[in-house]
Image (cartoon, rainbow, N blue to C red; front, side, top):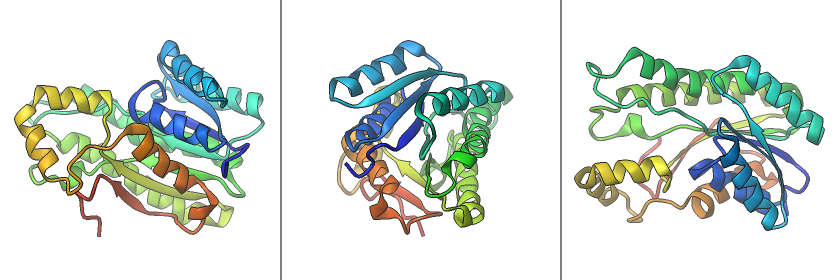
Length: 250
């Protein structure tokens, strides 16, 4: 139980990758603050954790609202006494061609992605100092063979990668590590996309050397748990594709 007693905030913890990461972290001993905008979903995640003998608390909050994020952090610290792990997973996905996508959609992607990541990292910095770990979720969308309809999504995710590298560079002296992962996982969003775009999905999977999309808990969550453990204590500032070998990250 290498994460025993550590407190982990996971945003977007009510389903998909966020739930998978929460379950994996809890299985390694972390106490989970499952943050999401739909209370019933994060409560369900917490119930799953508790059935396995873990510790979790549901936290309802809007990651696009700065005051709401501050309140959430205060509630978590009051309940658990601190924060050692921050996982920025939640993201509204702006998809569409450059001529079709709305500014509102792009703004929502920015506010829920880079801006929310920026805000939560700063809010958690005082608690993470002295050995904390940040894992931000980015995407390999910017490295797609065809960027059509993915420009806005790639742009916000690349912003998260840049912020991650900056946090690692500036906060290493504070004992804080920061890394980004770029996952492929069977999230509800990806499953919907595969159903709606079967031909493109087939071509997509054909480019994954391992021939499959990752499992939210067993593949993505377990890798996040490793990154947060002392076994990865010298890993910081990296963008790591957890995608079955598809993307090349020089």
